[in-house]
Amino acid sequence: MIKVTKFGGSSVANATQFKKVKSIIDSDPTRTVVVTSASGKEQSDDHKMTDLLYLCYEHKRYGMPFDDLFQMIRDKLTRIEDELGLESTISEDLDFLYQKLSDSIDIDYLVSRGEYLTAKLLSNYLGFKFVDAKDIIIFKPNGQIDEKRSCKAIQKLIKESDKIVVPGFYGAYPDKSIHLMSRGGSDITGSFLANVMDAVCYENWTDVSGILKADPRIVNNPKQIETITYEELRELAYMGANVIHEEAVNPVRQKSIPIHILNTNDPQNRGTVITAEDEQEKRQAITGITGKKDFSIITVVKSHMSNDFGTIRKALECMEKYRIIVEHIPTGVDSFSLVVETAKLKPFYYEVISDLKASTQADKVTVIHDIALIAIVSRFMKNKTGMSGRLFSALGEQQINISLISQTSDELTIIIGVKNEDYNTTIQTIYYEFEGDDSL
Image (cartoon, rainbow, N blue to C red; front, side, top):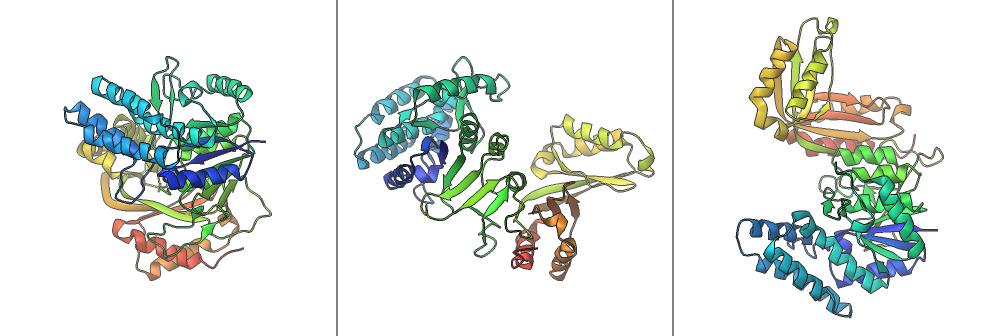
């Protein structure tokens, strides 16, 4: 029986955190596969190691001195090593990296050294075998994980080692050149390993006790989510909730492996369990609320549009031409809207509007900016009569104007669009309206 455990940057920020990690690993003999992020911030005004490595690369690229930045990395890692009483080996790795940086270095290789060096320290401290991710996470030329080759490498590893530490966030192409995942990619590393190793659980250790129903910076002391489905998690993550990388869900969902979000600083807290739907579990009206700001709503008006073929397709082809992702497409009889990120639209604003008018032969195209999208997620919403009515009544009482309403076909999520300035008030209003609705 194997549990794959992934520790985020805050969990390995200093020697004190390393000791907490060791205590967690030692407390459960099934925690035999450990994935780690790069060492994170010790304090709010500190720098993440990944950010320091990016800065080193940019300084090198523009001919600026990077010695002070690199010294910050060196000081951080050697201090952890010294305070843990480990044999001094990290300096040799750092010397090698500094020399490569002084000569010529690939950015993916350089940035991946944050995870690489943190994992080497952690494996040394735990007494586990260090396994370089480049040897087991293999990518195709298109940047997607080559599941067949990676599985073969991991299966071989399982036979050779029973306790391992793997750096997250990166892998390699077949020629061994390093390839980085997107930020937060260590979650994907852990999830993929859990899938291939048929783990009983994928534990994701961070600095918060599970997932909260709303952003604590907006809602005072929001409740903790005890259980959530894979689908709900995907919705929350996609809409901006800082929980777990959205691409980390699919590998474990394929084999119904539960994800457990836990707090390194409060390991006794039960956290949040993410799993397939369980009809026996306690039902709640709303699982979570999240959102993102700065969207634009492009509305295309065309008389008798319902009699035309391909109008929406032509509009989407226009968006594709400018590589603008369309988030939602509310439709009416003679109009439809395209909801897009304002930042993606602005560089091509006039070209996009002109092309839309021409390609769709629209009577009118209007654009509204400064829109926030807010997602209300719950797997039980479709069984709760009157929820939409309560939602809109509560917002109406607060004089919040709704610019957009959209619901997923499975009724898992309601998306509403409001002004950016109403973002916080909208989330607070929705949360407090349904806060006491613990069951149906």
